[in-house]
Image (tube, rainbow, N blue to C red; front, side, top):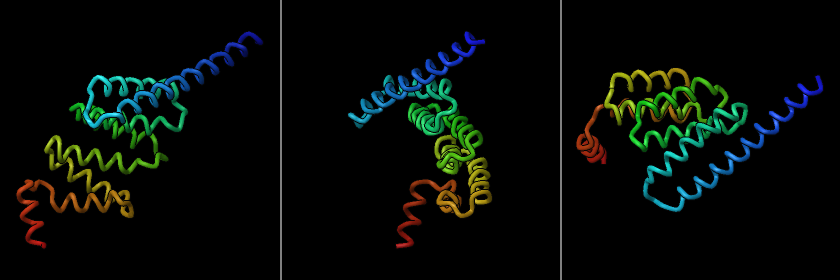
Length: 164
């Protein structure tokens, strides 16, 4: 029994050490990314991998949904829109107390609209945000997005000029 308890403690310490190490790697990689305005795909891939490793190894850590959200944003930047959407949906559904949960829902709808040009799906998702989170900032953004859904940049500029 003592051996089993000792092994359990050792695994806990190892897991904690791994999480600390991964956090340090993330801080270092984010610092490198912050040194330039250009999108470095190699650095982004390294960060995405490290965010995923942290999230898989440190499941109980409060930073997991934040790191997953950052990973989803990097996926979007790397052109992996479907993966980004799936991750935003996963964060929204899997972390009900996460402070940016509604933002994840909004970004999902926004990506359907702007990247996939799937206006039917984006309309459905914007309406769902308004229904589920009516007092949120994202619900207000969803209402504006619905108002201009499917409009070309030229149409938006013309509309804006008319309202001036």
